[in-house]
Amino acid sequence: MPSPHRIEGYAIVTEDGMLADAGRVMPDSLKFEADQNFFERGLDGVDVVVHGRHSHERQPHSYLRRRLILTRQVPAIAAHPKNEKALFWNPAGASFEQALAALGTPDGIVGIIGGPDGFGMFLDRYDVFHLSRAPDVRLHGGRPVFPEVPTRTPEEVLASHGLASGQRQVLDPAERPGGRWLATFVKARLIDEPQFEF
Image (tube, rainbow, N blue to C red; front, side, top):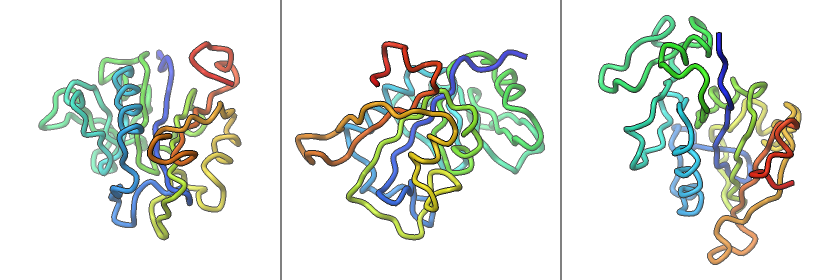
């Protein structure tokens, strides 16, 4: 069965590695224009978006994207009743490759956008992970980006799964010099590709 051409993760996290509060809501303190623009451009280049029931990108082109929605509410794969481009997917009942094939995109570029269970499930499969940081924000008791956080930092988790960090890019230098930044983590076999700076 064909496998995805590339799997990319997209997340913005707080200083303590959280991506949402205890109620699974991303606070406004993690939403800013430069990161939202990067995120939207990235997802415009993927063939499939994968996310949990509480995650969604809410962008102008969202309705155009094929998507797999992670859930335990279906046995394996089921049609979304309101979105013909979406399927509900239970990884306990069907493989990732089966879900992509059912969606009609067995070998495209996949963007993983959350939540913690979704991000964690793909740790051994990411080709690229775009990690944005808001170092001036903390969410005690929040939802971590990966299951190992906060025992380990998100960067340590990605490195332990074979992803190397590229150069940091400050996302909003005019507003917060040296503040919010983005680092792209890449599997070793992709490091020499021109779009990644190391």
